[in-house]
Figure 1 (cartoon, rainbow, N blue to C red):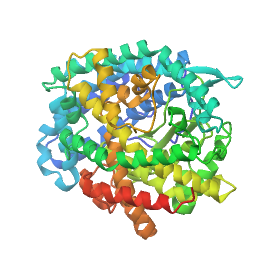
Figure 2: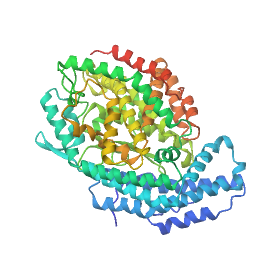
Figure 3: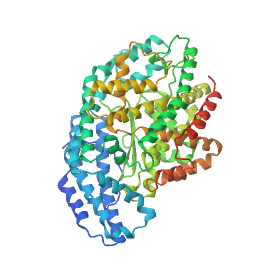
Figure 4: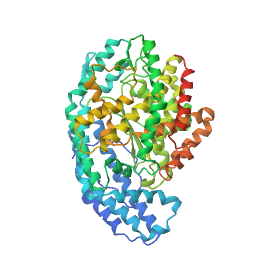
Amino acid sequence: MTKTIERNLPVPARTYVPADLNPADWDQLQPLYDALLARDLPDATALESWLADYSELSAAVGEYSALRNIDYACHTDDADIEKAYMHWVENIAPKLSPIGNQLREKYLAAPGLAGLDKARYDILTREWKASSELFREKNVPLATQVTKLNSDYDKLIGEMQVDFDGQIQTLQQMARYQEETDRPVREEAWRLSANRRLDDRAAIDQIFQDMFTLREQMAKNADCSNYLDYSWKSWQRFDYTPQDCTGFADTIDRVVMPRVAELDRQRRAALGVDTLRPWDGSVDPQGRAPLRPFAADDPQRMVDRATEIFRRVDPSLADDFATMTFGRNLDLDSRKGKRAGGFQSSLTESKQPFIFMNAAGLQRDVDTLLHEGGHAFHFMWASQNEPLTFMQHAPIEFCEVASMSMELMGCDHYGVYYDQPEEAARAKRKQLEGIIRFFPWMATIDMFQHWVYTHPGHSIEDRTKAWLQISGRFSSPEVDWSGLDDVRSARWHAQLHLFHIPFYYVEYGIAQLGALQLWLNYKQDPRAALDGYRTGLSLGGTKPLPELFAAAGIKFDFSAATMEPLIAAVEEELAALPA
């Protein structure tokens, strides 16, 4: 019996799926899918009943899949958990993909489709039609191979540790030394972490190269010109184009890069150094001690204070967040054998969110918890309002509005973590400066992906050169990378999205503009902004992207006309804060 983690999740009543179903056993799953495929759908009533049963099955299976991924993310070094995860990846998920396509095609061909309420079902129909057109059965084993390569990447990252300050630490834990006022300590910690990543450079390069080859073949199999084209259809981006993303990057270059350079000039002057080095970017420029909102070994304090921030923004948020508990909904501390990064996972049957983090006692951990809390609220509200699991999930561009807005609405309440008001102001400054600095990194990652997947057959060396060119365009001229060529050329290895979910990064930039709009609305009229926030999030995936933004009281637009005044508003807020 393979090991899984008991979480005492609520068990909903089922009408189609047996209560004792084991989703890891295909002999139990297949009859349920076969019965759905065999059912007649002569009218809208029959089709809606069929959708309800299919949704119930999808929710049960989807939750099981999510839990295996969560278990493995939390314990990449546990052989039993890895066995359960890989059984799912290798033996169950590949069977679900073709049968899922058959069910989508059955829906699209059903006589009852014409009788469905278009206002309710048109989004679902559009999405399933696009998925059906893209599906190729010969891509299923290729996708499985990509998933296994991601597991290899996760294990490499999860095993990365260094011996520093008298203890063995993960690279996530090492990040706190970048805030130390002792410059030699920062440099030593930075170089040690960077060199540890370089130890696995060849292995990570090869993992990505193997992924790239598989993804190119998947695009070719699906009759797409390249994997960018394939991904656009896979992500169902109906409302903007790759050319729009290129224009977005150009806008960032024009609007944001001069501001980043100015922030760095101010930082260099405040630090009193001749040049900024990569290990000078996180320390307080006034030489004050690092912000430590909670002890690295006390994630409960982080959660308790975040709950208070949610209460101050809106008491109902605190009530919802208080339902989340360690083990069942939260795994927050950084430790050996844990996947890097952070995420919120939606448990579709129990309708429970799960937040995964690698907290190390830093201010950014506070922001991450607020961010993932926004995702959790989104799923809670959407799943409560929409019975069909297929229609609960909004496009990612709007999902990230949910999370980034919560960071911004919460930043005026950082004082719950700090005894001194000036510390809370420093934390807010860090958050707002971080927004300005984020846009160039987002453009770097996005444009790098565009290059990678529109240059078939390129080598690892070609890719490295392209990375250096693109990252150079969006790097501050004030930061001196001399003598660090190897580290700089492999910086992208730490960006998990490039491996796990290609082209999932521009969404953060689009959403940040939406979140900034919502934040400005909140500053003017908190109640109206929160009402719009909840209204938009509660719609789940039932409306197209522009309508979701509109429901929240904001515009879906990432042109210079929208971006320039928003960045100016951030600058104005920064100017009002103490240095």
